[in-house]
Image (cartoon, rainbow over all chains, first blue to last red; front, side, top):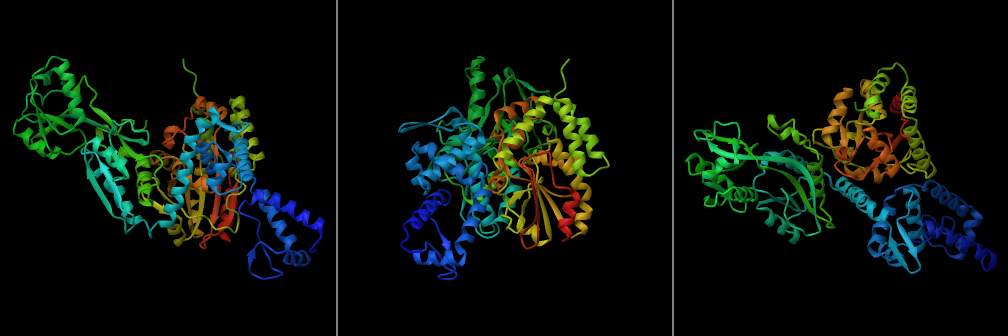
Length: 377
Length: 233
């Protein structure tokens, strides 16, 4: 009844409680006063609603929703947690998430209840993250990001996803390894434009930093920028590329010392060649000659012509007259990773591609002698 | 002499429960009592976790009957992308969340699903299983139970979280699982220890949920009779 003080107080207290659950404001259908409209009601409309029973129905719906929502690990709880972990301030986190401070506070407590431990320590005006909070932060963030990405991928599948995808690859990764996944990507996002570049690790790192590339696929980048994230994909093994009539080709593996007398061929910025050279110098090969070619494709012809020997991926196919022999006494393998930049939202195409890379059974792409190796860390 | 891990010790029980001539619920409960007998402490930890999840209402707000099933796109065990939309174009779809190839309950459940697969197809339906595991392990589960249905990877439990089915394994359970021989990190390509609550949704061609089974007690699964009945409607 308009003007009734007790009625007004009653409604206000319900509104306060409900606003905890519905932080965006209290709304209901004013079916009695204006059918099919939804909005904050006027006192008159409310009176009408009470008479017609619409308010009672609404409150029942809300009550059911509240009971049903008493759940664990919800997306919004994790979003609030991520925001609070950044700001360490309930008011600012609530602003950032566009919710009321009590709603945020409550969601954090619920999440703490589900996880069975405190995420934050509230001390007067200061908020600290607990050790538990710090441990669990990256785990929940990854799950949260996966969820956001999954939604975007499902929405854009077969329709959108035309954002260009820039991939930066290490020079030793054959397209065979990636072509099945690129094929899947092209089917999923018919309008996607893919740009692939190749380069040494430091160039890939620079491209990721500047945003020129979204995804890098390479061995370790050797860059300590904290925002670079890497996930192991598969192990790549290297040996020495030799002509079949080379003195070392018939042996079951080469000793490091055997290489002291060889001319070493390398493409520019090849980290493995540089490591091999350092080891050979340690072994006393001070005058070993090193020759550089612009790309690895230039190597086979020079090796065939007995110009020298060079590092080569074991899994790579070879033309006639050449073979790859393994080297003892030095680790000539490395893990190929997929590199991305932490905190940068990936396009639908990019996150689909990263997902395909990470879930892939790489033993299928390996030559038979490598298939038994454990490819999971 | 090294003691066999709990996982190894339970292998015979798992095989036995897969081959038992009994309804799925009974086979799962026989297995649960085997676990209690072999490792009462482990069983206690399981009880505590299930109790905590139930008290918190875990899984209660997953899609309900009549809700639209949220769309998904995930790679199958061969790396081909499978979408819910495309599945529904060829008929009613049963979507089942499993924890992984290492979980005996999931293996018994997947085996039961593979056995009713011809009936599901005859009813104009199809099955898909979703796990957080990468393709190598999906292939193992599929080969073990002789399934024809695809096993999809929900990487980092993103879709499970969207459905509010993602749970975090606490330190107590994690320790017990690792000790029992179930270190799930390499299977999921992450170190998060987040798992889905096993659940089954029967989805009509209109994309609406026709039947669902969600129980935070991972030892309980939708019965195969119930599943077939829901498909028949």
